[in-house]
Amino acid sequence: MNWRRVKNWLGIGVIVALSLFAVAPVLFVVVSIYVAGAAAIANLGGLATFLTAEPPDPFATSGGVGPLLAGTLYMTALGAAAGILVGFPIGIYIGEFKRDKLSHVARGAVNMLVEFPTIAMGLFVYGMFSMVRGDVNSVLAPLSRDLSSVLGGWVTWFVGPLDFYNAYIGAAALAIVMIPYVALFTASAYASIDQPLREAAYSLSGREYKAVFTVLRKVVWRAVLASFLLGTAKIAGETAPLFFTALGNHYYAPFTGPTGAVTLWIYEAAQSSYKVQVDSAYGAAAVLLTVVLALFILAKLLGRGR
Image 1: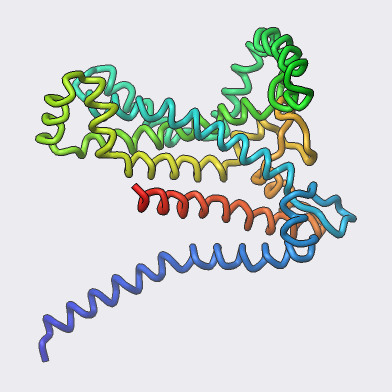
Image 2 (image 1 turned 120 degrees about the vertical axis):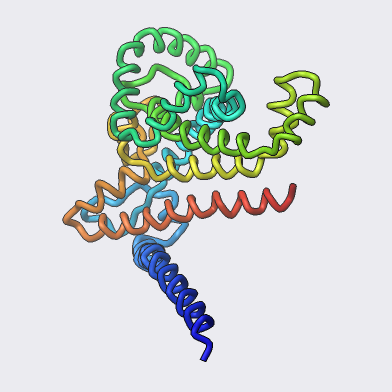
């Protein structure tokens, strides 16, 4: 008997078993959410109703997450856009200009933000906005009137005087959560570029800005896309930063005021003593999980097409 081969197979078997043990909880959570969520969506009126209707009250027989899903998608889109616009250049700076002293400070700050409590970020954004709300509204109020007179009243759903709680400061809090993820992934991607390739990029482009943002960007675009998706998935499932910013809303309402989110409803409905609302929380969790998974599938398709 070849004991070396036996030990090799035993080692591989242990690794496979541990891998399955690690994956099993994730699969269990995903399957349980979809099973319970699908049943809840069917009982609450079907998928179309669930995606468009307002959340059920304790005595309702149907309902959904329409305004909550709209709020989540809107705030996530704004937060992701701001996160990539700020996080990407920060990542380039700390990854490509490591010799600068300020680069070390920036990396330390980004590493701290990764571990920073997200609920504190929401409180910070709320506090800062409260200080400048009057000045901001003095600009937005006439702007909203002018745009409404030209484009129609629907503009007030997006542009207008902001309440103390609104979708825009919710998106700002989500953007702060996302920035360090994008920055660190981008920095790692740029730092991993081979030195000959970097020297060729600088010599051919002639300008440092063009070499970094045009030539080398094409080398690391997959890693940057992965960081963007990771950050977007992260903020799409965030709850804590929205407590002090978006606050929550069960109805379709302008984004300039309190705005609902799927995560906020899951937190609220899961604590309800009424079965219909607990069921809607499972359905909302299934919808949110689908949105997150769709982001990764879309990234895979875009990656194959380039």
